[in-house]
Each structure stands twice: as structure tokens, then as C-alpha cells.
Length: 90
Image (tube, rainbow, N blue to C red; front, side, top):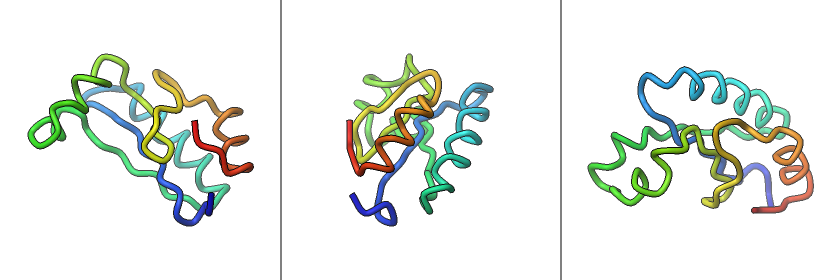
């Protein structure tokens, strides 16, 4: 996996303090690999993609690596670093 094109997304919800904290952690980790993660609010996304909220809404924050669930409730830092380093997806 080319880290410059690697997709790392954090699924969040407005008012979720844990989401804010974990996005900061995710940003720091990804920064070490030259990756800028993005965040998607599952409630806002539900207007066009209701399945996203249905699938992940009760587990936010959720980290998606290349569109696949990597971890939820907290960033699994050691696993994420290993996967980014080795170019693996979950």
C-alpha cells in the first residue's frame, strides 16, 4: 500500500468527546506516515448513506483503513502502525 494514497477515516458523531480525542491520536499517528486522515459524521452521512450509520453508529469512533473496519471505540495504535508500516489492510 502506498501510504501517500492510503485512506484512513474516522467515523464520528457530533458531541462525542471520545471521537475528538481519538481523531487527535489518529492524526498524530497518521502524520508519522505522511497520511492525513479524514472524519465522517455518521449522522450527517446518513442523509445519503443510511447504511453507514446503521452499521457503525453504535460503535463510534470507528477507524476505517482503506474502507475496512480497523478498530472501534479507540485507535488500536500498535496495530495501525504495523499495518501502515507493512502496507496491510484489515
